[in-house]
Amino acid sequence: MAAPGFWPPVAARLARLGRLLRLRTRSGRLAFSLIAIIVGLAGGGLAILFQQLVAGFQKLFFGHAGASLAEYAAGLPWWAVLLPPVLGGCAVAVILRWLVPDGRPHGPLDLIDGQAIRPARDGACYGLGAGLASAVTLGSGGSAGQEGPIVHLAGSLAGVVASHMRLRPASGRLLLGCGAAAAIAAAFNAPFAGVFFALEVITLNYALAGIAPVVISSVTGAVLSRVWHGDTPAFDVPVREIASMWEFPAFVLLGVLAGLAAAALIRAVDLTQLGMTRCRLPRGLRPPLAGLLVGMIALVYPQVLGVGYGVTGSVLLGGLPLSLCLMLLAAKFTATAITLGGGFGGGIFSPSLLIGALLGAAFGAVAPLLLPVPVFSGQGAYAVIGMGALTGAVLGAPVSTVLMVFELTADSRLMVAVLVATMVAVQVCDRVAGHSFFGWQRAQRAAMSPPGPSG
Image (cartoon, rainbow, N blue to C red; front, side, top):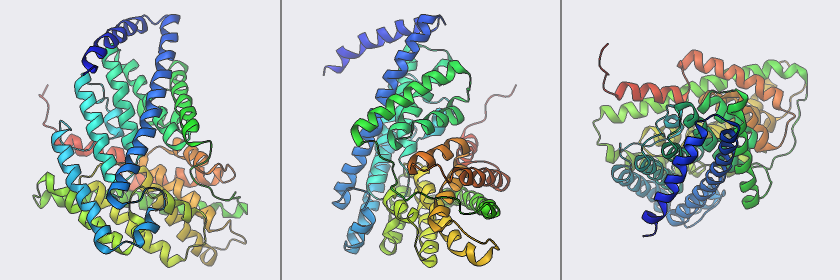
């Protein structure tokens, strides 16, 4: 009950601060830096809160929370694996119907298109409703990622602040970038990737005045994350090295395969969504049906459940049989397409990491038999390279993805190989699919929007 009396004075102060920022003076720039710190703290805090919320829902649905969900689910009875995604789909349908004004999942594209800068009440509804739907998706075993919801949640908060401050569109977009950078930095302990993701995907502004606030927010979010989680990389893997310069043709070939796989993943999500639409299935029934299909896959391959960081870490260690890599690749690919195309919440980053790692591991297992190269870096190294290449192609953000891989693994020795494979994959995916995953989403929403008035 205290909120109604608390918020108006805060909103009034934000409005006065917005007038100061619009003056474009030294005091205005200093004030924006202060706002960047506040947004960084808020974005980092929301990222941590979202992760804890996912863990709570995972505990509720499966009775277990943590990266080892796949191992735990393998010992559960069939109904305890099949039922959670279905119940999660029902809950997501209710959340989207009653808490999200337009009834659909939201993600980073809504920041890219500037849709997060709405009237404060609408911005809060979109952010909180979409964030809750995504947390339920991941907690109930949906094959999706946490980065999209976290970025949207933090960006929605920044959008509310920008709305109250009545900032110019360019300044408002910069504040959204600050929120996104803080969220990425806090979620993955990756401040460099947070900065470049915001610049490469959200703000599209590389001027010094536009970089500084984003850096401030990203570092603030990363510091908060390290206080909470500790300063450790997300994946604890051995140091890998490029064994021979003769391997670069293999890196290029892996980039081609990753680009084709990325285009296929985008197309698979599209076909799943199109199939459910053509079946005239009510929107409220799509997430439960998708949950049922994902649960059926998980009965055989529980590794498809949830974010999948534990499985990704195991793949990056290397040593998996080729047959298992291929089967898990097909299972995760299918489960991700069903989850995202079936109307669940969540992002595509984390599934892309696992699919790319599996593709790289499979390639690393067969490359020594097929390519005339005297020595290879090993299956684990190719898993790291494939992880970066496919993810960069799916997101259409090669620079931030390469930096993300470096910060997730705390290993820079493979970065040249990751960069080569990622750039090739991005070009191949763009050539085959015509766009990244975000580009596909934009095309879908443009097709669903009513035509504007003719000139």
